[in-house]
Image (tube, rainbow over all chains, first blue to last red; front, side, top):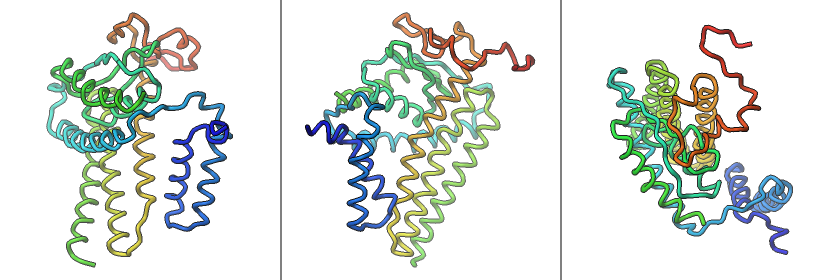
Length: 163
Length: 134
């Protein structure tokens, strides 16, 4: 019963929150409208979301966001240094193959987004069976080291968050 | 309106401008398509982020309005920029990389760009830039 009214509780909460942020100032009327949207939109779009993202550790999300924000700032400074001061012939671009332990589509999508936003790497493709990621690195003298860092820093944490 | 907060806002705006410029310069000077992708997907995120934080602080400290729109813009930029990057990379792989030039996935299957479904892809592979794409 609760499943039929609220097929995606997290999505409902997120839609309501986004609406409140869009309105930009608090009013009870907007809150009612936000909750109504949060109820209706997930029901109408339910056929596009066959599975629910199951989250084991909601507190881990905050820690993950903090680490990613920290890395984005570091990545920007690193990439800016490479762009400004490293001559093109000293650049060592590399393709990395990152084997995956996580299996849920949501976790893999978050990992791909994180890799693209952080230190000198862009995620380019996923293996057909979802077992590995193809990542392009801007400057990577030691590929194995970079792969291990992605696995321990991001993937291990995502494994804790997503069931 | 204190001088200190004004300096803070100005510093954030300058940082944002500098990183945006570096991202654009990276797009111009890096040697090939794949490395060029790194400039705008990263340097630009911090550039946009700083400008948005500056805007939030300015309206909060100087006008007393707490504005949440900037937070939304940040979230949407951070969600959409990896997707744009991924699609540019995939289109580039279709057009100018042969399967053999890339490392293979360890489990023995193909990358999804070159797999069975890729046959039906609307993107046509061309040999080089000298051949016009029809």
